[in-house]
Length: 63
Image 1 (cartoon, rainbow, N blue to C red):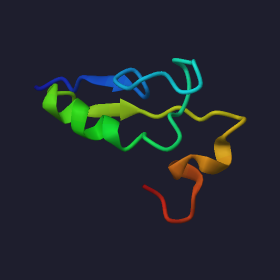
Image 2: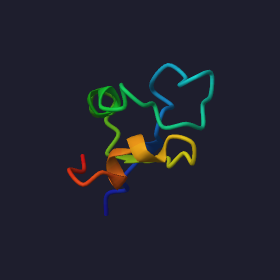
Image 3: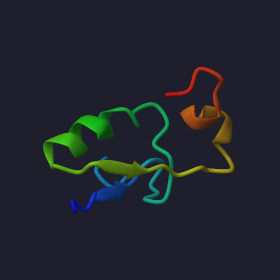
């Protein structure tokens, strides 16, 4: 059995508006490439109340 190791969203990128616990609006896609290079297989997304309309998980087009 292989364990999938991942990371919480935003931990591999510069802080968004000075916060670690935030969806990095505008550059969240970059984290997928970084995670892949590090051998990480999953990213746990964050849903921010203030910016929820900009989160791709809630947009009709999705990711």
